[in-house]
Amino acid sequence: MSQKIDSNPKQPVAVTPRAQDYAQWYLDVIKRGDLAEHSLVRGCMVIKPHGYAIWEKMQRELDDRFKATGHVNAYFPLFIPLSLLAKEEKHAAGFAKECAVITHHRLTTVDGDVVVDPNSKLEEPLIVRPTSETIIWAQYKNWIQSYRDLPLLINQWANVVRWEMRTRLFLRTTEFLWQEGHTAHATEQEAIEETFRMLDVYADFAENVLAVPVITGRKTPGERFAGALDTLCIEGMMQDGKALQMGTSHYLGQNFAKSSDVMFLNKDGQREYVYATSWGVSTRLVGALIMTHSDDNGLVLPPKLAPIHVVLVPIFKNDDEKARTIEEATKVAAELKSQGLSVKLDDRDGIMPGAKYYEWEAKGVPIRIEIGPKDLEKGSLCVVRRFVIPVEGQDERKLRKQFLPRAEAIAAIKPLLDTMQRELLERARQFRAKRSVVINTIEEFERYFAGNDAGFAWVHWAGDHAQEDEMARRFETSIRCVPFADQIPAEAQGAGSCILTGQPSAQRVVMARAY
RNA sequence: CGGGGCGUAGCGCAGCUUGGCUAGCGCGCUUGGUUCGGGACCAAGAGGUCGCGGGUUCAAAUCCCGCCGCCCCGACCA
Image 1 (cartoon, rainbow, N blue to C red):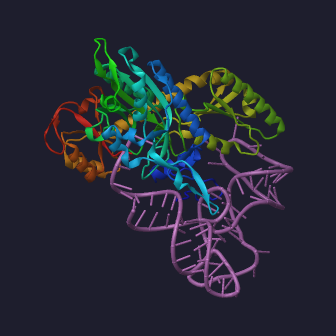
Image 2: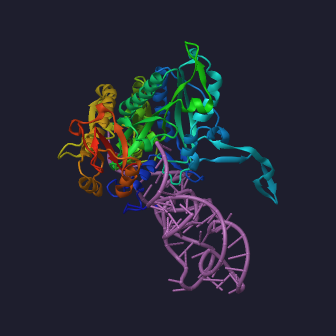
Image 3: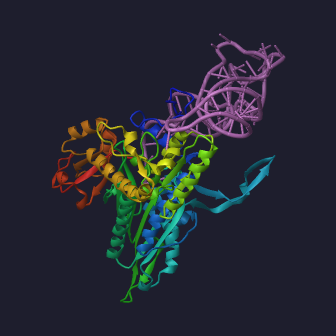
């Protein structure tokens, strides 16, 4: 039930301000940005071309990084025999509640209705993959004989299905797109190094491409991936102060090698189980992107992920001006394209320039260039940034806009995109810093999360799983991660005592509400 | 699965309480014209199994029964 917030019904429904209703704002940004929509299937979404283009850019960046670290892509089946999934007990138990199950393979017509043919029951049900460890390791068994076959470094881009009870566009849908890396190693140490290496890839990607600052750390046993010995993660903070898990990297030990019986002959001629990792990020990252950078005008994209870097809007009053401004815009577009930029010329007729501005802003295009008759006369271009770091006492819209001599303007675009990329990361860092706090007592903790500006609480913790649940019940918070040493800000360093139990604690953890 | 809400044109809704003319409005869409430096205007159009199935009635979007679907809030999760 989206509510109209525009008093003037003649105007299109704008984006609900963040401050008014954050959840609705998120949905509005997606809608106005033309990123995705609900489908006919409950819990599933349609990723529209603009949203998919962003995902494609993420894929490209990630895939390059995977290749650079020695990985190759492959593809494994969507369906997993039930017995295969069941082999690794903890893993199977972890996913049991959210598996789609295929039980029949044929339809038939009864009295004009198309129904499932009861005679087509499968001997063994198939599970739609919630993740592919089991099916992949069933193959690895045949691929790995010797230490010479290791390491095996494979990634796949795929869809997976997890039958969640409640869904949100991009953040949690029944079907989603992701990549899953599955590697096999001869030694524990090598596998653990891989787990950390890929977490670093994710962290680098998050900060340098998504412009989302992340905390790297380790999940507590209760939050660990089903079947893993260790789960590492990157955690981001959204604009409502909630944490979002943006990627995970798991050290699986020999669990899957044992359940799939994958052994290799080492240099000493002895048979050993191989050591495994798996790691993944999903289309959830699009949600992270939206919730980190976007504003009340709609989507804001870091230039490195923007499907369109620059949109050109010609402004004209008559056919003559139309011809001349479009001609100039076409030239400018060509010059920008030759710099490797992605450029869109919006020469649609019958739409007011202002309407175009709103539309492309809602879609997150970083830079707009307006070209009107005055620019033709002066040999100038009007360059407008999608966002600007506000300056006290100055009109933001004016601040975003600059009139530059043509050549100067064209030369300025790439540096400006770089600047904007940097500013987004910096802005997000500052926001996170502002919404992070060191807390030492449970009373203080309670007050903090009772307020409207809660974010990350750095607290000492020595509790167990049950006590984590207690915290969740009382405050709706969870331990997002046990951060690595280099992630801990100066003011949060040092040992102390657990916020709940008072037991000694070597370091602080990050607690927050989470998506 | 528990609690709440909603299904009427592509989107957002009114109409239902108290059954009745040809089912309406805004946005969007099409065509023509005037416009165009921050969401244009005028005119003429196109577009509907009123979620589905029964029932009551001379007559159902409206009343009754059954079903289906979606959204929101909670218990699970990338």
